[in-house]
Length: 230
Image (cartoon, rainbow, N blue to C red; front, side, top):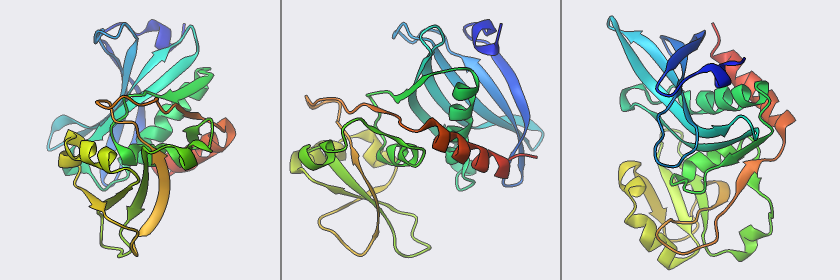
C-alpha cells in the first residue's frame, strides 16, 4: 500500500527531509485534510524548517486527489510572507507534479475556482493549458500578464480585455492581498503570457487547464528540484 492509500484524514507524514531554500533545510510533509464539504480527498504538501529552535511551516501546496480515478486537481498554494523570494512556489509545483506522476496519477488539472492569475502563469510554465488554444482569441475573460522591465521591479502587472472583468477583479481579495497593478494599455513592461481567468461571481464558462506534456513537465520538475536538494 502506498502513502496516498495509507494516510488517514488529519494525519501528517514526513516524506522527505533533503530539501533546502535559501539557508533553510526543509522537511516535506504530506497531510490528508479532513473533509472540507466538497466530499473530495484533499491533500497538502508542506515545507517545514527549524527556525530559531521552532519547527515552522514555510509554504504549502494543496490539491484534490482521487487515487482510484488517478486524477488530481491543483487548488492553490501559499508561502508565508517572511519566507518569500526563495523560489518556493516553483519548488512546490515541481514537488506536486513529481509526486503525482511517481504515484501513477494520469490526469493533472487545475481546480476551476483558481483565483490567482500569476499561479496560472507558473502552471503554464509546466505546460498546463486549456484544450482549445483558439479560446484566447475569442473569450473576453483573457488577462495579459506582464512583469516590470526593471530588474528591481517585482510588481505583477495585468492588462484586461474586458472592462467588466477588470471591475470584478478589483473587488476580489486576491487583487488587494497580492499587490497587482492593472494597466490601462500595453506599455514597455515585459509580456509574460495570456491566461483565461473566469471570475467566480460572474456567470462564465469555466477554463479547464490540464497538464499537456508530462515528459516536459517531469524534466522541468527534476531540474528545479535538483537545485533544492541537499
